[in-house]
Length: 76
Image (cartoon, rainbow, N blue to C red; front, side):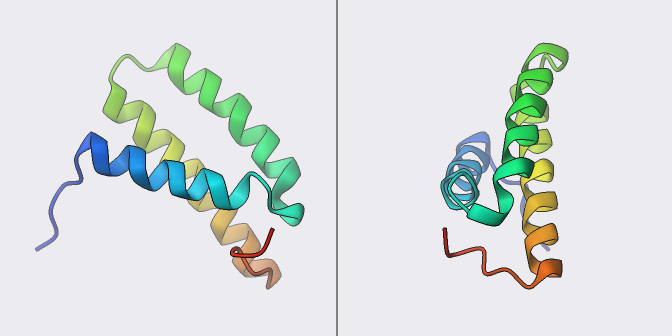
């Protein structure tokens, strides 16, 4: 049975993923959209956990897109 991640763990995962995709050449347009979404999450959602989960979901979409293109997410 999996455990529910803490906000500290969520923040850590988001920070790590942001560092990977922020400078990834093939993800730059998606990352720009991600940053705008983050502003919306922070404006529209009152609970920090909801904001973090929204950010995590958006980052997973970038990850999925890169994987489908065959791009290596670890290279920038």
